[in-house]
Image (cartoon, rainbow, N blue to C red; front, side):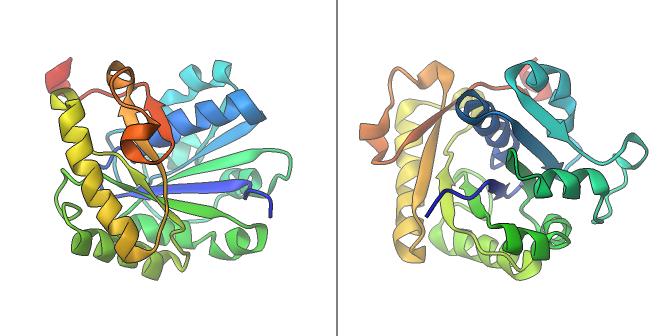
Amino acid sequence: MSEPRITIISGRFGSGKTEIAINYARRLAQEREPVALVDLDLVTPYFRTREMEEVLAPAGVTVVAPLPLTRDIHVPAITPEILGAIQRPDRFVVIDVGGDPHGARALGQYEPYLRDLGYQMWFVVNPFRPFTDEVAGIQAAIRDVEGTSRLHVTGLISNPNLIAETTPGLVLTGHEVVRQASRVLGLPIVFACVEDRLADELGEADFGAPVLVLQRHFYPAWEL
């Protein structure tokens, strides 16, 4: 069976899902142009893929978001821009969506189309964030997203980090929590994330899973 053309990347606030969506879309564009990155994160007003349009376009990634007049209206609604990107058969699509109930409702508007076209939905876990620091919390977060969006999570993304304070040891310690969740939930770890500054110290052998090396695009105010 061929890989689905549509990948949904979801996760709780602070999980790093938008950075991951951007980096995954860029890697996908290197292998399988063209790629559309759909900004369906209508909840979090801080780190948004739509801010990256000028950076991503030269890399072969087209950012698709609601029209300018509606960009700051946090209402889950079907828009022709997003629906058109999802339905185009000639490109891969990465959807960045919030992992709370409101974000999942936004995704749920597209549920009939996504089921018809086929999708894979990956949930980003940063075990150093509240509510996803243990298996029960991860399970509850996934259950919330699935129940509201009416779509199923098909894999986990391991992204243990404390931003600038992240060390290789901390990454491996956090990854063990994600591995436990993987076993309990019966969901594969599709890849583990490593910031590029640590990429020489951590690899697939350390995780037992593929690695996505992250180039950071967003920085908290205290790091600037």
